[in-house]
Length: 201
Image (cartoon, one colour):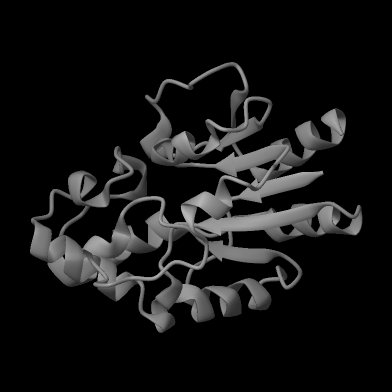
């Protein structure tokens, strides 16, 4: 079994942290539950310069290391690894965030999973001249049986895998998205994801 897992808002509570950061930096109150769009500049109604400032600040090592784990994630993933399954974390974070991202994973019980940085969202726009450790053409050669993802903007990266089962982690910004096909299903926590994977394995 080969499993793709997104990083932010699947393994850790990134959006909740950014909601707090928004209040601290700009005095704006947009609770996590009101983050309607994956694009935080749109959800937070920020002009380009403030959005760039927020994203740069949120990707500083000390910030990346402060995120809370999404409840149950490490327990479920380590169970999969114990079964001999391969788990790869495919993040849209730039490679400049790799070291603190890797450290966070190691600190939260994810030492055994592989981490790849893929330019899913064109994030070079706020961290200039960003590098990514995984090229699109190399990612397209990878094969997965299951994917766990929260962002509708990332769904296009599954088009080359017609049999892939996509487990959409329920978040406020994906409430209104239309799933591309019947392989996509919504899940509300890691316990329900684990149960479904066990039943289908």
